[in-house]
Length: 280
Image 1 (cartoon, rainbow, N blue to C red):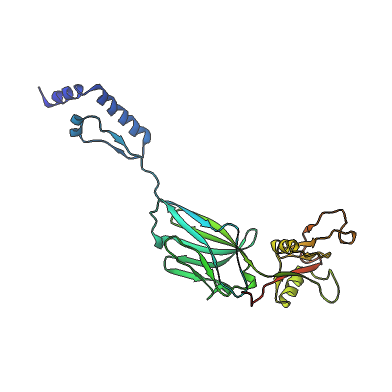
Image 2 (image 1 turned 30 degrees about the vertical axis):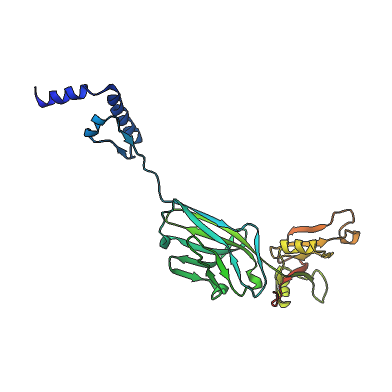
């Protein structure tokens, strides 16, 4: 009997389940196409069925960013940490290839660069130079420390972490302890367009207040009939005691909102916010 005939006879004597297993394995490999199919060595046949199919999965690793809920609060001249941590799933990314970027959200779709780091390389932008750094309290810590906090630092910040293939972001709101006060020039009320209102607040060592700051001031009892500009370009005013001379007596108390107004053509008062440099 020649060698081919001998091999054929050996193959036909294999158990039925083993023959079916081979057939199923071949079909599976064809279906998977570009995946990796691993089979046992011929010597393993004598020890029973040990066939396995392995599918290679993407192992680049998703990056997950976690930031603090709510907001963090400090005062002008103080220091504050904007918390941000990240990890990868699975943990297989080279830390030197991770980019950390902090930006400040100045409008709905507008951002100002604050800080960026890639490995040991880092860069700080604009008025944040010499005032910000990463906390670096262990692996996965992307928290940003801001020293000598200014009024202009108030607002919403984005923490973005990027590896070779994936990225994720989180947001932190920085609030300041301080007071909101209404302002109008000596020449009379409703004389300021948006830019003039912004400049007027700066002259009072203040900035235009945000809606959340005005709302907090209303909760604390601020009552003012005249509408004023806020930092987002809207015009609002807080009423604690509804009355006819302040927009109808039958309307509920609250912060009344005129919506977003034309920044150049329309004129109102201003609501300014300032924070005490000597606060503890």
